[in-house]
Length: 397
Image (cartoon, rainbow, N blue to C red; front, side, top):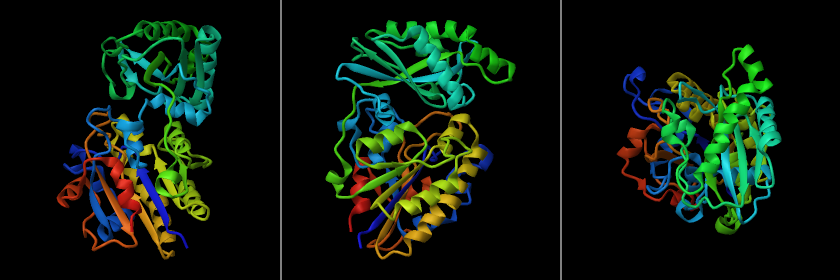
């Protein structure tokens, strides 16, 4: 029987010591017995998932987790999400992530417009297309606040864009698009402010006490993405469970089958138990199952340490625990647990620092006997400077 492999990624869960936790990190204070068991009985170390030359984020980091070198494969975040949505991107097209954001007193207040629902978000995207859409500018509705823009006929090679979630509280004029043809994007942002200010959907949100959608925010640009198939590269047939288009797009690019889970929201209220159950079912059909959970990352962006801790504990209880118990019934298996990158609650932004990882299962030498956290991972002396090398370590006997 072929070995079975599971990777569980609590997105952005790595952190710095937190004052309200007495100087401990989320991993150090959370009740995560199953993750600790993997760490104690297996290999614990640190992994650099974000190369120094690239901006920290799940697009780059998850590429490393999947065993692909971002410096060789990365073309931008938005093209990956376009793949998830099945958008036909031409060779001369540029794709942009298009957030619905809330700006107050000239500063970025909320990268998600109060975590607007997918249904409401689509209303705003439809309004954008009605007013600005043409043969060169096309908007595509995604999930919640996460949408896309495809622009044809312009060169954005030297463009500099800033992600809104890493610039909470910053004056937006300081982070506006810069570089070649930046004026085209600035004009779309400014025109969206005027459009949304009078849009009935926004007036309704204000009456309901919800955060208004002040404008769009464009970032994460790139051209069409292409990656080698995972089965060709590693000889393993894989699948992915996630609620966000970014990871879904990466999975599709490498040939993984996407498994949809009802109630998976990409937020704190996601269906943790459903993801755990779906992972166990997926093991019947696939050699490898990737389970990605966005909740811990969103808690980091919200600056909410307690919710980050609670989300991590649910990942341990409802996903890692049941999956680990199922794997232990098999003759040959491996499990890898790791965040893709840190999202410290203090900064509320992604960080490019190394993250802890733990591998347990067959054919491993003596365990670390250490609980899973950043300090212990550093203590082992195991460090992978190129995160994409971790996959081979995980799969090798």
